[in-house]
Amino acid sequence: MAEGGLINERAGLRLQMTEDRPKHSSGDLHSRLKTRKLLGVGETDDGDIHRSKLSQILGHSDQLYIRLPYGLRIWQLFMAIMFTVIGLWALILPSHFIQTTLETDNDHMVSLPIRLYGGAIISLSIVYWMTLNSQDRDIIRMCLLSSIIYFTIQFVVASAHWLFSSLSFTRNTLMLASFHGINVFINWFYHWALMQRKFHTIRRSTSSKDINKEK
Image 1: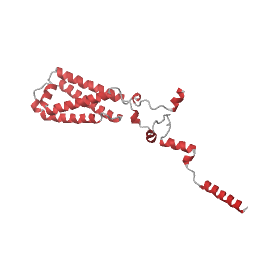
Image 2: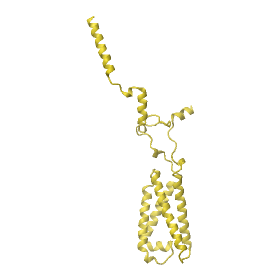
Image 3: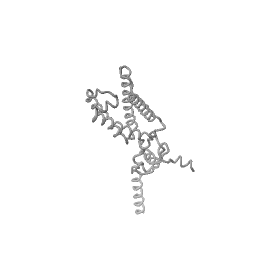
Image 4: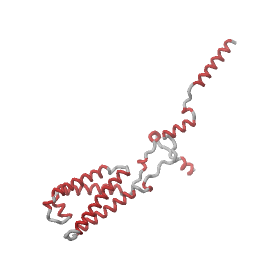
């Protein structure tokens, strides 16, 4: 009897210790699901399922799903090359630059301003080269906006100069004005396209909702 009472007493102590032991939240299924949802593990609110352990830990990055407008990268590369060539041309050969673009012989008076202009254009080209592989829509839009402002000012100032001066329009000046206008339009189009919702994201990973629909 004494041994039976001792066994019962030990069993009661073990049961009491088990009840007094703090419960882990991960032991409860509901708590585990809430924890996984807070950590971004498993299925997300929109039904997406992470395909790798790394994506489970880090979650989704919106920059990985950005879909840029068609031809934007080619246009960025073209702008970077164009600004580089124009900047080096104005910096190294200012006389030839002013004679070709404006068809004037007063190149000896404007060599220094043309060289400074070339340095500014090279700085703008570096911005395009540095953001050529950027996925940030705001950075790309900033570059496009700077180009829009640059070509708009060039177009307005050049047109006003030729309209209110005694100089006559030439083929080079008309081509230059048309070139500025085309650049303003293309840069404005890509700047507008980056704000449209249809270019925001591409298709994400297959979700459980889509799997159930296919079944």
